[in-house]
Image (cartoon, rainbow, N blue to C red; front, side, top):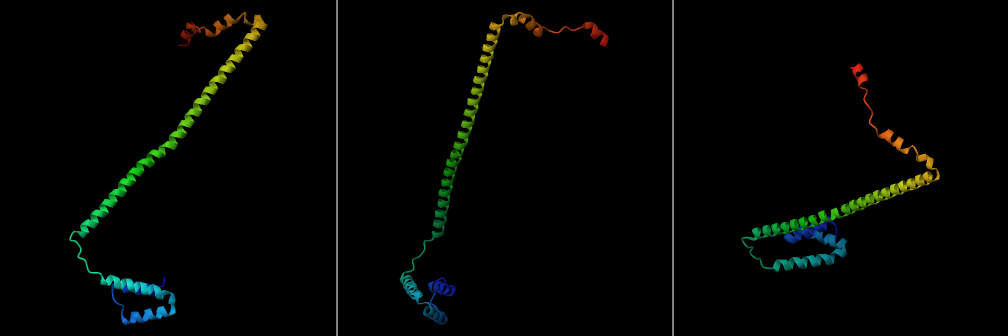
Length: 165
């Protein structure tokens, strides 16, 4: 039934009565394809039912009503898309915000762990120093003199500066 000849004859029967040549082609087709006979009978009955229907006058504003309905449908689709777009824009930020929060939380956790480890290392070094000093008290005798050496300001030799200028 996908034969183009048969399809063309069907479409022509919708618009007008078939000519003698077209009827002959149809009889030949139905003779070679008996499975199409029932389909053609249904098609003929439907065409005759349409022919018996009275012609109804079309309203004068029919075109305007159709165009208005099309515009309303387009406006409804636009509203639906804009609402859906807002929802999609909002939901597209949720995974990004979640990733940002996980990254930020991880950074805070690792920074805190770094501080804890540094404090433990400092505490261990203080314990080691105190154990060393308590075992050998002579190590700390010159501690004040050494501490003052590193903290004193260097003196400027004005005589050398005068000579260089």
